Length: 381
Image (cartoon, rainbow, N blue to C red; front, side, top):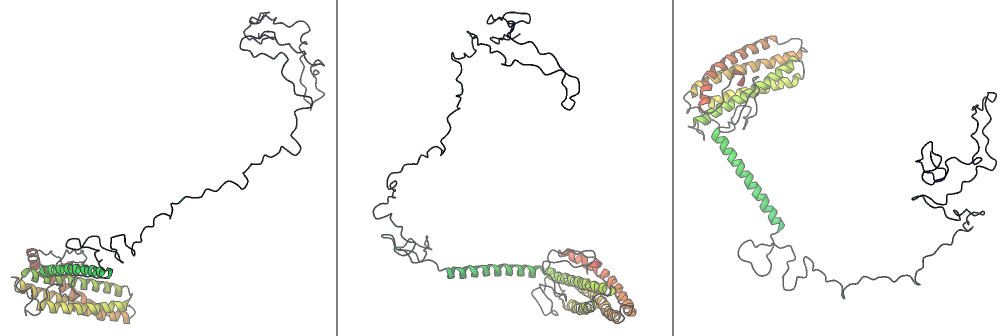
């Protein structure tokens, strides 16, 4: 049990004397009041319940235990006179107006101002970019070139190249470069006959080429003018390229015609469709005229190709000329089925054209392979 004197906690439960300070562990008779009698706690809300009165405490409070004369080592000592008590009147209060404010003291007139120091006469001024020169060095009133254009350094300064003249030279240089490139491209096209990288869809729609042919079949490079002699006379590759370009033009005409037929069939934009059909007829006639004028003398199969292609294009032209009145009849009848005879004749001529194209390709494809041109199907004419 703990010692009531030195509060040593290590005493045995049955010990009667503190093992640390020797004080008795049991207080003398009358030192502490007896333990209060146990009582029941009765809720305030139920005052009629059974219970015991609250415990009684001595009127003067419990007696004060005097501190031991000797404290064990490590226990703080109580001063002889005890700890100071709070005065009865309490601690002094702050004055009513508060404590006086301490004002900062400054010298009369304030602190002296520190003036920046500059060298006598101020800092040296840098000379302007143009105007007054450096001592001994001439300065141009305009920007100067650092490196002379040619020759050894000359005394004084080098006159600058005028900006307007520089821009003129630059523009002339660009124009010359563009002309050189254009001349090179034109020369290559003439040598190859306008044959570029070409691809065509199976539907017969013409795709872009390096040099697109004219709608009438006139190739972008060499042209034939009735055998009067051109730059391609005697060049079989150029002559074959001219025929290949005409075939591309024929594809474009066929694509335009198919789109016009589709518009009439849908009874949509018939005016445009009829105008396109008429344009296709004009293009077909020009293509027939061109193949008749081409110089194909350098190609062994040249005349055979001319006759077969002219026949196929003639059938296509006949079909075009029948589609035009069919479209006009459809327009006049409000798309109620007019012009059927023209439509049937156009389809018959289209069948003849397809058969003729197949015969032409049997001769043309070997020629195209010989001169580095692509092979075609009946949808590629």
